Amino acid sequence: MLQNSTSIQFVFINTSKICTFGLYYFMMRYRLFLIVFFFLATSCQFFETKKISTETFYEEEIKSINWKDVDQYPAFKDCEKFTEKNIQKTCFESTLTSHLYNSISSKNIIARHRLQDTITLKFSISKTGELRVTKIEIDSLLEVDFPMLKQYILQSIDSLPTVAPAYKRGIPVNTTFVLPIVFQTQ
Image (cartoon, rainbow, N blue to C red; front, side, top):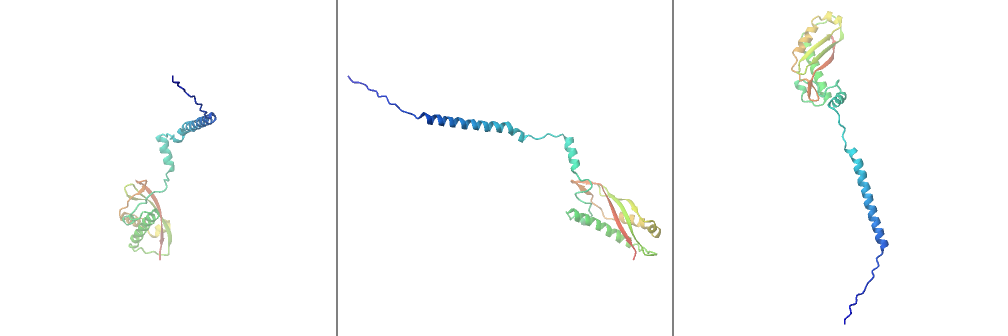
């Protein structure tokens, strides 16, 4: 008779390490859960966009535009090559004043006595580039000595080369100018 002997082995497992590892694992999962929950609960507000009506957007945009200034000044053919606003303005004004000076000087106006006065020329340039004189302010003494001076100025303006209109945000706009002209006899 053979005897089967089975031996029983006792394996001692250090349960304190298992409990510590299990507790550590549980705490890490809990922390991860809290972080994910916190992120999900608060992250939506970071990605929200404000919805504004078109009227509100339009009103805010209109307020932000400086209507007293243009992006590009009116330009004569010679001034179109400049891109900086200050240079465009200077070129426009100098072309206009030199044309007026040359035109009036060619009339051979003779003064009876020495004069120095300022003529104020107010004009507008339309969206289409049409230059129109709105007002010429001349001192009464100057007008008495040179009764045809207004006519000469108007003729000079009419003989100007074509003008490209001013632009604001890529759109042609109407502009008005005041140009002081110093009238001095020699």
